[in-house]
Picture 1: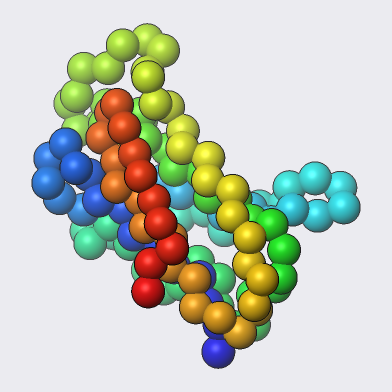
Picture 2: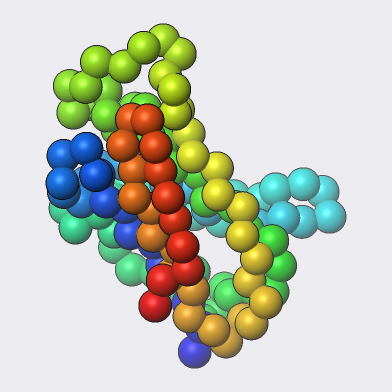
Length: 117
């Protein structure tokens, strides 16, 4: 059974990015459709998969991570505009039965991601 999950770590503070807002979209013939919007829990994860087996589909997807609002809420003084505001991560799902984990490691001035396990 396939599913999609994400996890965000705040590398500036060395902790999960609790409270960060994340939106998942899927590309359609008419543009991008929002599938789910969540606020990450204390472990920096969504409560449950971003997509479960019934919603998984082959195609292009996008995760939007609201980085600047998260850091501002933590009291970090960011310039205006912030160097990194929203991280837009476009990725493909080629196997609807597969497990896709998309972690984000982020600070106010850098980020990295990979396909996790």
